[in-house]
Length: 131
Image (cartoon, rainbow, N blue to C red; front, side, top):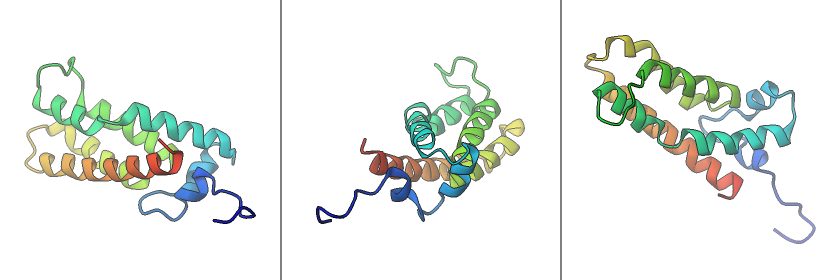
């Protein structure tokens, strides 16, 4: 990039990324780019590790604090949907639908799919936000 080319904003950096719909995220915050980018940073800090927390809650593991895997998936899904993180939203929704039957054979696969989607989204956010 030469000196005459303005740097790309984090939103521009994310535009066109697989599993991320920046237009939907911007629409959710009334088109306010600064708000959207701030919320992406909040998401990055708040949801890193959510897939592991959901897996632990499903296993009833120590340290889960009695967390409900369905509630954890619901919270993640809602945050992701608001920000246009479509792949994370879809993977979390699949867990939310399946979680009432925590013994479901497909649950480990669903958690693995969520981990892949969340890792990809978080990597893109880190790259775009410079952190």
